[in-house]
Image 1: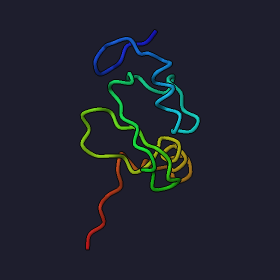
Image 2: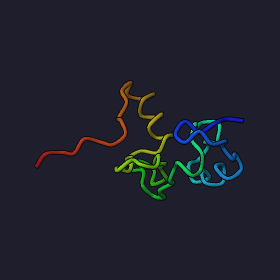
Image 3: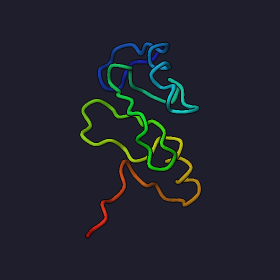
Image 4: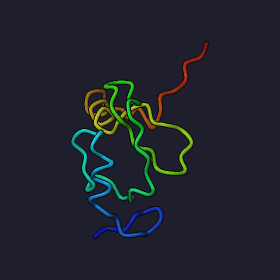
Length: 89
């Protein structure tokens, strides 16, 4: 039984696993937040078009899902971060 790192409630693993289904192979074990403290945004990943997760209170939606971000880190050796840098005009 884990506590949410944000609100300290007990994480309901069934509810969170259901919310995380669009995030490919991730499970509740990959997160330290409960379902009330995370929002899933479908079709937001710029690499695969998959879902991303956003901790409640964050104002920006990530550009990469966790799986694509991990693949980029493995392939390039650098972390693309939460969001890509805006290109200048």
